[in-house]
Length: 173
View 1 (cartoon, rainbow, N blue to C red):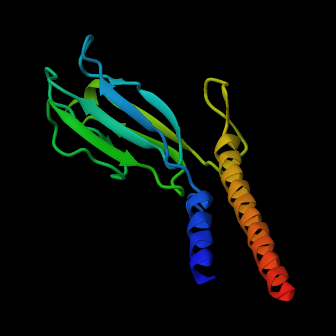
View 2: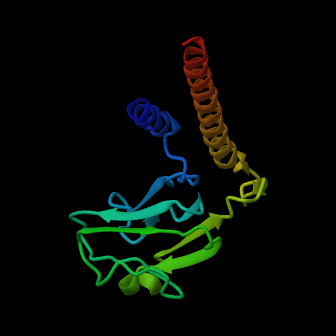
View 3: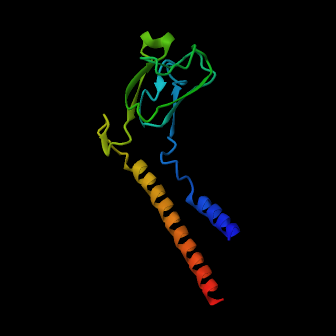
């Protein structure tokens, strides 16, 4: 009896998946340096992301050294270098607009802007009049919850059937 219960419990844990993980891992967005033009421009200059997303500042073998510093020191890729691979992940409570710059080329206009959308909002309009729906994140989380609830319900039914057959076998003796 105990052995079957342990097997049933292991099965339940296996099919329930990630019960405690309701937030998705965010996407990774890359910001580079315009290597074929002036070499003093971020590409893209403006970026719209969701809370939980990661921004990766990535350039290699650039003619001039660069860095990426948020105006209020939220993130800082360090000293200006020709090769940079720096990532920053925005938490789920950091929605807003964040301006950043390249320290040695700030006066030359090497600026950027990251707009971080609150994933709890239903519809958000960006500056380009594009509508971004964040319902996908919420509905994906809801489908995970629904799958987990369904898994638990199926397991309870299986356990009750098993328990009922055990009682029936005992009363036949």
